[in-house]
Image (cartoon, rainbow, N blue to C red; front, side, top):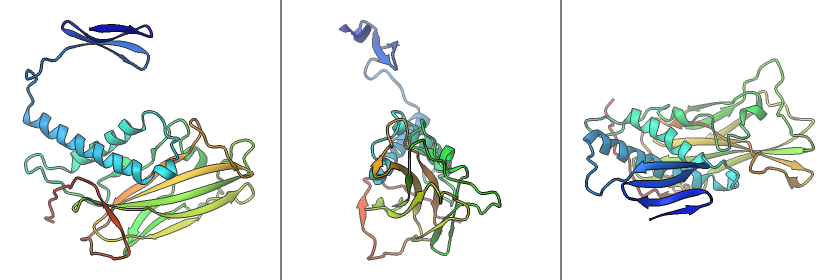
Length: 263
């Protein structure tokens, strides 16, 4: 039965289904259970997207206190889509194994959690992420021309948080709490040129670095649903194989990525 709700029909009526999406009426053909045939490629695609959705959920959970609930309404499907694009590129269609290299998750670079307030509109220049000898370096270019962090009207300071979370895709684990560094920036010391952040990272991990800006008027944070600059700076795979470290605490992902390790 279809019912009228807020000027839109919702439900099943004969061979069609009435839906409402983004303020528009949609009418789609009802699918009879057992009649939809799936090809091998379709099943494989669904499996990969399921993995992408699960990994996206863990990324959101890892950064939940940094995002502060101020993401846009489409962030979840956008994030899953970006991850799915990378996973499809890295997965062998015949063996179904994943083969990851340093920039396999390039689709996550500069991913904004809130498209209403893009991070690069505030930074003016994007930092570069590199991994060398177990150190993840997030560095703003040292241009001669000064680049200043942009402040909204009435704000007096900004706390920039660089947050790094780690995933062991092979083992199905994620670091329990991201590693963070913060920098308090005032109106008079807002030049970003040459600022560098260093993080120790283990081998054989997916390292996802996020940058989060929280603006204040005196001690009152002014971020809101329409203004909260936050984005993934980059996502890099460190070379080698993870070696157990008692200083790191991990939680289960509930999924593992079967990988091809041949060089």
